[in-house]
Amino acid sequence: MDQKLSQVIKNDNIPPEMMDMLESLDNNAQRLLADHYDENSNYFRRAQPAKIAERFGGFPDKHPLLYHYTNLNSLEAILSSRSFFIGRYTDMNDKSEKQYTYDLCKSALKEAGASNKELQEFNNDISNPIFDYYLMSLTDNKNSEALSRYGDIAIQFKNQSIQDHLAIKHTPSYFYKRLDPGDGLVYPLKVLYDKKEQLEYVNTVMKAWSIAFRNKDRDPNDMSQIKNESLKALELYSQCFKNSLLYQEEEIRFVVIKRLSQEQHIMPDLYFNGKPKIKLDIEPNMIDTVIVSHKLEGKISSIQKMVQSYGFNNTEVKLTDLLY
Image (cartoon, rainbow, N blue to C red; front, side, top):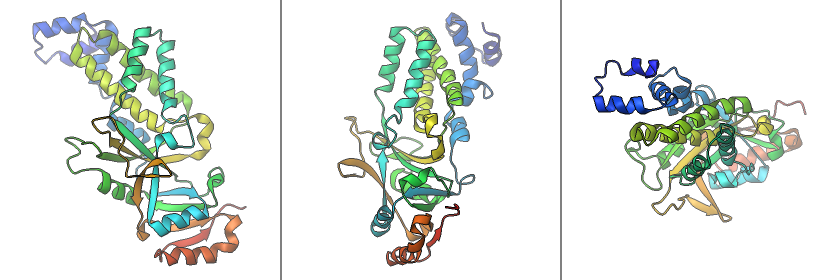
């Protein structure tokens, strides 16, 4: 038996039949099972949601202020309606959203010599999600030249206020027990663009998924658990891994995942121009500042009046710090 696994179970009084089962696992599966319980192992650090959150969470203590780049017409629409529509992942500007990560996973399987049966099962595993998700794209860079192509306005939000307003609306008090259809979870993620680091995470988890697949008949319970853990980790990766060509976006995104209906139907708040949306209610205290580009420098006074006309009396309109 693998020495590390022996150390893990040495004081557990394992029944003989279970010991026989563990010894029937191949060497890779025995080591994986040991790593599953080892908080310092690469597998544990890259598969456990709490560890993933430590690495990729865009939490308020590190990113208290976030900015959404848009145009003047959209700003007025947000203020007048006091609402911000958050789009589904399928409607993002990056059309490879989500699929980008799963393509990395499939490549990792193929490079590791996976059989057609393994590839087919992986495709089946990722083809039956229980959650739908929506993305609010932001950044903590208030002076982004790259993002100015989306418009000449940057709306400053408090990270915590977005979290609070979305969670109150979408996350039930019983979320730690279950999520019913339409219920959701809300969390901020910092996007990773570095492909080398992406592959470190993907390769570790895909190796675990593959080992679990190959040993599931010998130890159905443990291997099924590891497979499910791996798939949940990959789903989180798919929400925050993006093509390195997009690195200038410096994106921090709020993710709202919503439980699908029993018929696998999505459950958005509404449809806008035929597209599913989640609605974030906007209150005046959520927007402290509106930053405008030099193109709108001559309109700062009129924009300030417009902002105040919709009840955002304490929101300051000011010029970007960029030189031009």
